[in-house]
Image (cartoon, rainbow, N blue to C red; front, side):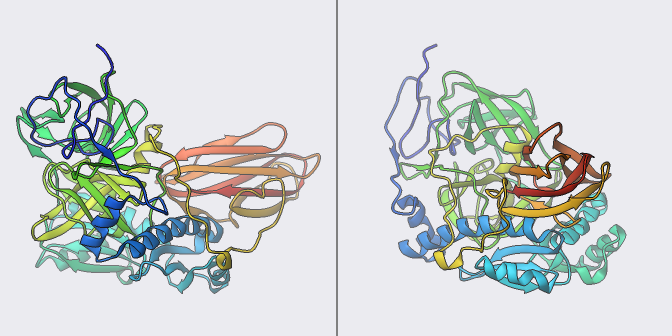
Length: 510
């Protein structure tokens, strides 16, 4: 069959990329036009700016500035997380959308935070400690009756457990059962009952057979060979049909419930993945990259039921208890969504953020919605996001540039550490004998050793059975390492295979 591009104006974007699930008669053989939104200065499409004005009350300049600041904050937060290691307590943008706050547990780390142009906040617990507390609750979630979720709140430096009305004692008991100290837990109540946002219908495009019915979802983002979407939109091996009721693809990866709500559909040769998102106003919004926005950043989503709406990222790494089971690692927002929006794309400006999972409420009265971070599935399934380019983060203003760190062959890496191994068969963990939190995505590192010495480099990820090596570079000469992985707690280990002396380690995180 001849390869062709399919697009429907004001209703659907070609299978690429955005949301393509809504009622539409068969359109086989037709190719109506659509308009790719032309970004204004700063790389932001006018349609995103208009949606932010409607939903957030920001004019064009304010919206552009906030998105650029969020992109800058992402880069600074990632670097400081690695630089401060076990002292890092989390990062968020204040309500003004401009002030980046970085929590640290050691007063000595405050200088590095200020040098980066952020505001330090001294806290009791590190982000690693809070994540460990959350994972303890994850481990006993079968006992979570009366609780709708829990998440790390870096702003209050506590683990927050969301209880249903009248179930505060149940929430506290859950934390105690998990072994989490009472002073590290805060309980809030909510009558909302989160649920996955799919509809069972028989005539909508992009649909898939589920339990004898037909589930309608929205495409998330184009990747090479297909698209990513929500995991609850179909199991591995299921086939999908597009908006024109023509065969579209096959689900090759799906996780739900459990550690994620994410899926990958491999499309056939009739569909052309493109770097755009449908805004349901007749435009295609460009997707330029996938820099993860911080807590407090503005974010917009599109879905085949409700179109485009904007709001704010409220929390990350939330466990949500759905009727089908708990899902970990979701991002909570104050954006509305409805059935059929599941799987749809989330953008911060032109940067891909995630895929609609579920929530409560609707777009008439409002509500909250959770999304699956897109970088997690890109890393887990080794997928490549299709982009229009221009995804680099905005650099800090000139007066906010951090001072240069120690020079060396690995000086192009964001974080620098030096050490000395006194003899062969010894090792050191970095940064500073501890570990660091990393977002999902590509990590890179470089290691140089003293002349005559041979040092090897290992990257390890913390699991429930301790640190496990996920990438390494061994052998003679300087070492270079690249690893595309999921979010988590990591550390580098430098091992003296032969010889002794000083070394320089440089590394960068997404």
